[in-house]
Each structure stands twice: as C-alpha cells, then as structure tokens.
Amino acid sequence: MLGITGAIFVVVAGLLVYILVRFRGGAGSEGTDPPQIYGSQRIELAWTLVPLLIVVVLFLTTARYLFAIELTRPTAGALEVTMVGHQWWWEIRYPALGIVTANELHLPLSLPEGTSPTFITLQSADVIHSFWVPQLAGKLDLIPNKTNRLWLDPRRPGTYVGQCAQFCGVQHAGMLLRVVVHPKPEFDAWAAAQRSPAADEPSAHLGRQVFESVACVSCHTVRGTRANGLFGPDLTHLMSRTTIGSGVIDNTPEHLRAWIDDPNHLKPGVLMPAMALSREDLDQVVAYLATLR
Image 1 (cartoon, rainbow, N blue to C red):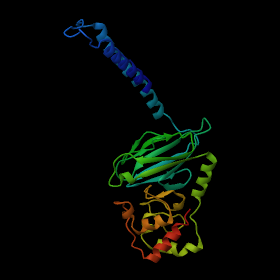
Image 2 (image 1 turned 180 degrees about the horizontal axis):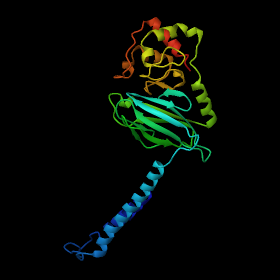
Image 3 (image 1 turned 135 degrees about the vertical axis):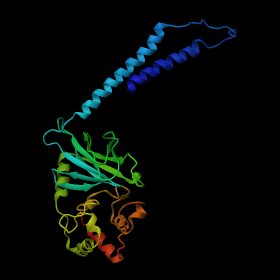
C-alpha cells in the first residue's frame, strides 16, 4: 500500500509542481486567459477508472492476507495459550503444560522454518479488553461470552511490550502486558520451572501461616498450599515475574510490601483491597512471597 500510494503522490505532486512552474504568470500576461477546454471523456474516464483499479488492487491484496491469517490452523504440537482479560490484569494459561501465570506471556521462537506459531485463545472475565502487542500482532478484542483466536509467529528473541487497547475502566492505562520470546531450550526450562510446586523454605513458614490465615487465600492460588482462589493472579511463581500490578511497578520486595499494604495507592481503583496487616505480619508475608520463584 505504501508503494502504491507513494507512487501516486509522486505523480500528482510532480504534475502540480510542473504546472505551477510551466504556467506561472509573467510580464504582459495580465488579462490573458489560457485556452478553455470544456469536457473530455478521456480525462473523466482516466480519473474514474484509475482510482477504481487502485482500490480493487488494494482490496484484493488486503483480502488475500486477511484470509491467509484467518485460515491458519495449528499443527500437531503447536503451543496453545488461553488469555483471560480481567480488570485490570491478564490471566495466562498453558493448558497442555499445566501452567498458570499472569501479565507475562512467554513464547518460544517460531524457528526453524516450519515450526508452528503459538495460537492464543482470548476471553474476558468482565468487560471488553483488547490484546495488542504492536511488534508482534494487530490488536484483537476480548469480548465477554465470546471467544476470539489469534496466532503469534515471533522470529526474534526479546521482550515485547503490549497494552490493553480498549478502554476498560479507570485503570485501563495500567493494564500492561509483556511478551517474552525465548529460544526453544530456554522456553522449555522456563516451563519446567513454572510447573514445579511452590517453594517451601523453613525460614518463611511464619509468613506462609499468616498468608494462609487471611483473605489472600480467597483470591489467589499458591499450589501446594491452602490458597486456591481464582479471582486474582496465581502467585505460585510470583517472583519469576518482572513486574507486579500488571506492569505498573517493578517486582521487588520493597514494591511488593507497598503493594500488599495499600495497592490502591500504587494503582488507584484496583480491585485488590488493602489487607490492613500489622507491620510484623506484613514483613512476614512479604518474606514468604519473596521465596515464590
């Protein structure tokens, strides 16, 4: 499209400049009209048919690629991911791998040639959201009670930043997403680590007891503990993630402590309540969560 429209621009702008220079007024030209021409079927046909042909070519080219994208189907062994949009975070599930995580989508490279892309099922738990990672794909909406599908075919490793692209409430701008693309061996190592149970370090047992005794267990899951809530993100490997709050702050023990103490201060409007823990209990819970890698 850029090539076609660029060529049109060059022709039109070139003719305009030529006419302005060639037929500019000079000394003694005042009051003299150029030759007057009324009606030209050739010219009218040209400026009707040429734009029509351009539109047809652009339509056919666009339709070809749209159908190629829509009709692509997963091959045997293709990685399947389910992403559920929540106000205001991303739930990410790998059904075949038994992995549940949040806000960071990890993918293998689609190399060597012939390797199947990753296919993603998009769903919403509440309102309309929109998956958009500009360097990897166009945006596609997550609509309540409807399932949409897209596929990603990343060819370079790295971290790609995404965003909810459909206004979904007060923290729409704070619903960020990171897509981390690994070489296949690195992805396999990440997946193996994510499938492992939560850490059980003796030094953090007091924090785990506090965590299991408060409302955290009603919203969050930590595999191997009493926590089996589904309303909030799975925390089994919380500290393996780069950020918390769906990208609003870096994932450090200091930020984690501030988040648990008063999440609304860091992300106004967030649905997670302040836990109102004592300083001692807060320190113990943070120490426990910091072991979940």
